[in-house]
Image 1 (spheres, helix red, strand yellow):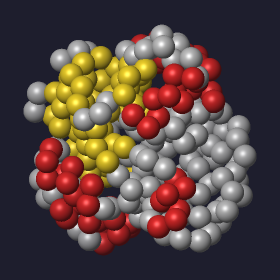
Image 2 (cartoon, rainbow, N blue to C red; image 1 turned 90 degrees about the horizontal axis):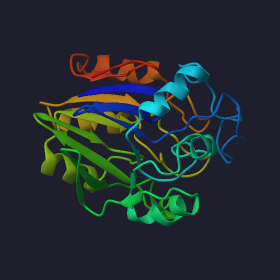
Image 3 (cartoon, helix red, strand yellow; image 1 turned 180 degrees about the vertical axis):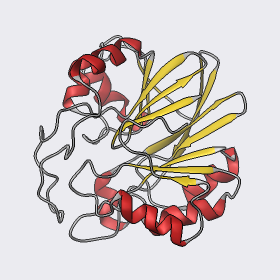
Image 4 (spheres, rainbow, N blue to C red; image 1 turned 60 degrees about the horizontal axis):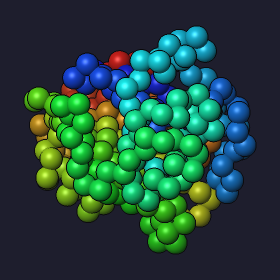
Length: 252
């Protein structure tokens, strides 16, 4: 299995000779307005994709299926809807299926709990996109576990550390964990994705797994930088198994 970070939470996963595109946000830099009620006011995405337009077109032609954890625009954007073929296989959570179908994607399917596709097992997990009233407004989110051979990769999605994440770690015992960091938040309330404290909790909870932190330095509501997370990793002695990939990096 090979995993590349494009930008934010957008991943390219090659498994069993198939290419999965996860949470595509494909717009050029500054295409969208800032997320409101946050500390930052920079337009989104705040950085370019690490590939040329020509390379992106070539990548899209290689993609066999798309995996969407939820439909917030930093995970499923207007550009992705325009560029991806409407007949491509697309897997998502039940709560997002109707919206994706309305966008014209004829082969979209919801994963309730488990799907076996092209020799690959995909399991859906739950999460919490914040706490209290903000969590209610953010809506339902999911993660996915991709299993093939001895590789078990858990993509946690937009979630804080919570019982659902703990349950996923207990159930699937992933060899590799990809978490959305950055401590994104609004001007009121708690973080809506993992902050450095949550990341360290994940690393401590499953000592045999490698952990990768993505979802940083791309959207204006994220409060923590890659350097912030790396500093916490080193201070806690986890540099041997917790990593912060750069945009474009193949990290597995």
